[in-house]
Image (cartoon, rainbow over all chains, first blue to last red; front, side):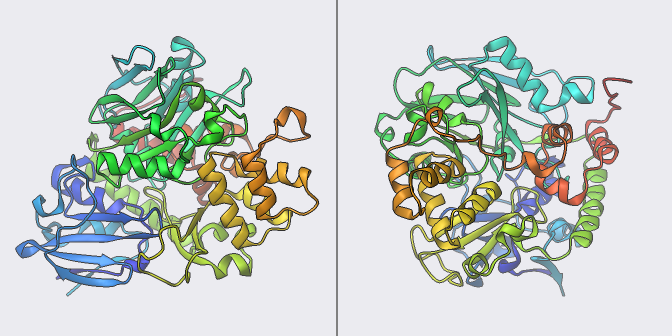
Length: 110
Length: 406
């Protein structure tokens, strides 16, 4: 089982970040999530970054998804960078980000 | 305390001192409204204060729980009003370490406030004074090194105290229809910046998550396919607007966005980040209606709104001034107004209609919805259901809340 991200379906609502942190710490915050909104260039360029096993990152950019280890994801100096965050554990079989994503940008595939 | 940081920050720009007070949650729905709390804080700290705050549900999983507020003396008159702050601004403000922030006094030099982690700093920014709101926002993001910082910025019109100025929120215009920008200018503030890196506890995290998903799925099913701003207003349902559409963009927690990003400087289908300023995020329905009414097309409306946002000028008013000055409104006549604004007292100018206020037929429902921290535009579309919203809030707070008349 893995997460599939279709970045063009993303509307930048941010619910996936907060749902991920809720599963981890039972609080509302985007700061400890394994998935992050990447925002650049005002409103028009945004996508998602997901930390998966082996410190690998899924970079779901508008122009297409790829995997790699490039440190990305806007967080700022006070925010925890994605590479220092926990690896996505798929919420023990029921990923919260996919459950709450309103546009089916994030789905679960086998 | 659930859903709150438990702290009010009172910052005096004149003395540069921050005083903190405990935030005590009120006991009834009406008094818990962010609008009511802001009114009370202003009555204590002065009607010329700016009050930033969020609703009890802001930042939760309740759909479109994105709204914060900024209360100020409006339009240069004696009436104070609260403008909504949308996008991610309400969400980030909620996690900044303060439930409400009161800004008093006048800064000695042009400055911006930098709010995060329960701290408020005043940063002298004389060099920003002649710059436009986008340049101010860019500089703050670059200086603080974080692209997710939310900036409520003024522009040259705000600095001059023009009653038809507007603050821009995260680059875009449409939230401020009451001249809050002028109040920023009077306080010698070029911007207010905040970042939310805190966390909020909930009484019932699991139950809230499950209930919110059910509610959201109900809404998504009922609302059908989203077309951005065109889903909310016929004004965006025209071919020239749709021909420039790049993407629709949500505010925090919104499953049915009303924000449509139009590209005018490059192919709307270009997905990569190429041009520096490719376009504009439209959600200002009254201004767009006005733009089409005076004869602009979608492209020129987009270019005009960009210029208005940069100058910190309210777009509806600028279009109105331009149409009074000229037989035909063009980008040139708009540019002329932006550089030489008329005093609205000497024109026939009406007050700009509210962008979100008109979502509901009655102002009480609008205030209730916004006071909870919910987007009035979304909830008017989805169907505002006070008992259900109250039930969500009670579950999150872990207690029953009476209404004022019970």
